[in-house]
Image (tube, rainbow, N blue to C red; front, side, top):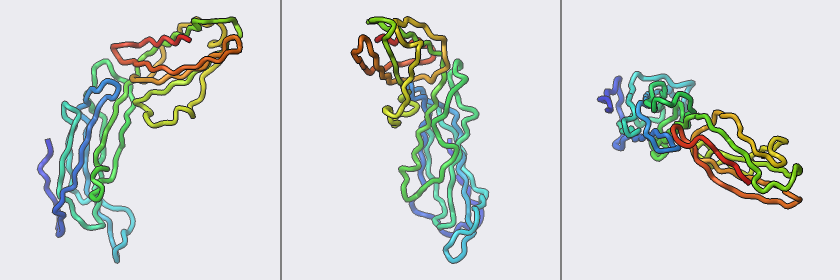
Length: 229
């Protein structure tokens, strides 16, 4: 898949160690690989004087192109100029990704571009996540209702979307429609597919109850979330 590398111009000094890169594109909610993510590596050169870079770099004309394959993978290596005024940037184009036919709306968890690093090759390993939106219906039911004074609130987060975010800092969702002896079927709303963690608190007869659950929704699979407390 990798194109033949042709260096243009007079590149006098080349490193013995290749610049390496690796890309994995996947739909993290179900592990489906994503083919067709295009990458483009561009060589830039700074004007330098007395060891200092001047202004913005300009492309030298050398480029390397490729696509993620049917396994959502792409990788490669190349010899670059090992002079401090040379830089290699990798650009990502998600325009022609190959996604399941039923998916048309999604978010991309991946960079638009980055600077490749020879000294820290592990930074050149890119994991790209494509998370689709889907219609989800939430059903709320106070299964142990005491009376109309019952109070309920909850918070949730999508683990694939924000795996490292501080869940405690998320705002509570609450309001009169969730209080009392509620038995409510909500409208279908556009939500991200994947695994959710769900935390709730209920006050019934001045007694606080609380819990934490998880649920999973996916296009073509489960699209209804039953919240009972």
